[in-house]
Image (cartoon, rainbow, N blue to C red; front, top):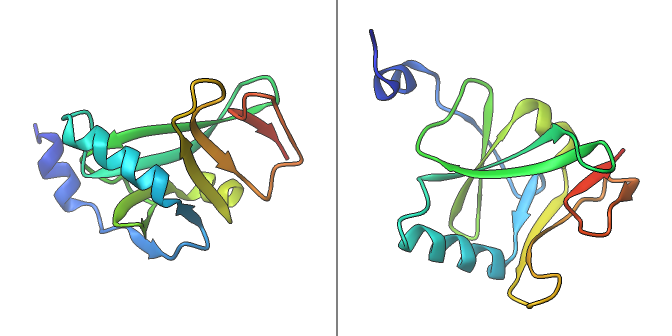
Length: 126
C-alpha cells in the first residue's frame, strides 16, 4: 500500500495560474505566514467552495502539504494557494484579505462573482 507522499509524487504537478484567479492582500499573506511560523500551516493554502451556509455556498480554507489531481496553483504575495478546478469557476477574481479588528476581523473574501453575501461574509450565492 502506498503512503500519501508516494501517491502525491505520482500525480501530475498542478496547473499554474496567475492572480486573476485569486489574490492575497499583504495583510492576508502576513497572517498566513504567522500561522505557518507557529507550525499551524502547510506548504500550501487550499481555498475552495462547498455547499452550505446561509446563502448556499461557503468558503473553505485549510493548509495542506500536497496537491490533488486537477488543482490549480496560484502564487500570490509569496504564498502558494491551491484551488480545485470546480471552485476556480466561482473564485475567479477573488481577493482574500485579513483584518485583526476585534469586531468583524479575520479573513475576508471579496468575490466579484457573488450576487449576495451574508453579513459575516462567509457564505454567498451566485
